[in-house]
Length: 502
Image 1 (cartoon, one colour):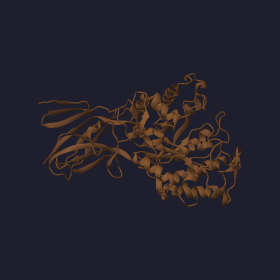
Image 2: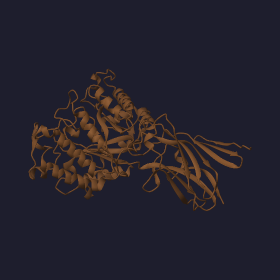
Image 3: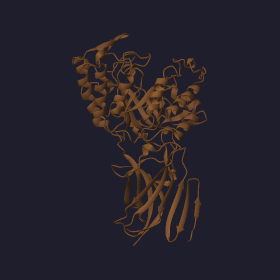
Image 4: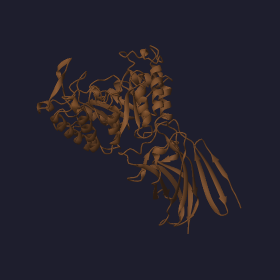
């Protein structure tokens, strides 16, 4: 028996060649890239847009040159994967049938175009309740006969009852038109798919008849389920979801209502991370029950810029004048929940993340959400044409979250893919490892995948073996892997050379 071992070492890759009794197998090892921002769906930082922003506000807010706690400046969009717009239905459809996405001159059209130009996916919450805000529902709904109520602090501002039949018909019509444009995972990362109640946060909902609470919940979650079939749906796992009050002991039906939404394919978010008296044990336990079954999106609850007295949080972990304490508290809660996404809230909150806690921004990009890469790949370097090419790959997730290919809207959309490239640089063969399940790849638990790839129809000669995390609908690389960008070519990671013989 003859054995040869050859090592080529670099910061990113180790190559080993072993030859035994005439058969050859090559093994390549890769190290994880923990620095580069991976622009993958449902992971990473969410940059918030103000409801009254236009396409120039980003620059006016100094988001393109945000001072950091490490000195120098950073472009906020360079650290985010998604921009999140919480806005009114009225801003999207000011008159019946007049949608912003059909008007290139509208403020929202230009704003979202500028975000897409920054390589950010979009996310939305559509708010209909006007309390504490402006006119959120277009007034053509009231003029059509919908029943509702006025803001007690401003009688000129009107909101519909969500159990009103006219409101439901008009909203369904709007949402179906919205989905025709935005039901696309390549454009939209998620839809905050409830939007009722105060600030659209799923609590403080005001009904014409409280007895309709469950019917309304079923109506709106089913509506989103059937209109947004490709985009992840999100709901706030609030202890009083759908109820008329905002803070009290958990309602007896909150668990069953949320579980009914999850059964329809909903994933989870909460808007009070870091707030000990709001994000309590009930919320922590609920998140733990669905850990790695549904992704969780985090929003920090405290507004540190002034009107929230965060230093009075009952945990005692925040000092007055030290917003960086709040950032650390939010990070700790997100880690406990294994959250996939964290937030850059507008204004002072984003300034605080970059100006006082920039190391945490980078830490989440390195170890939050999901971050996938192959630590080693072994393959036959010499194969007789027509016989299977054997490949064994070991994959890792160095993020504390998970890649949610198990949610219904993704439906195992992403898999391990392999390809062969010939001497002219052309990809001549592709394979999909249909047995791979990226949602099972968890931090600290490497997963080994073995594949026997058929080579029928391939000509003899030398090829380069490639791998990627592909979209099964087209076989193209779709998820960015946590490896050095220098090793990638159009999303494909080159593994090594093999020869097909007669």
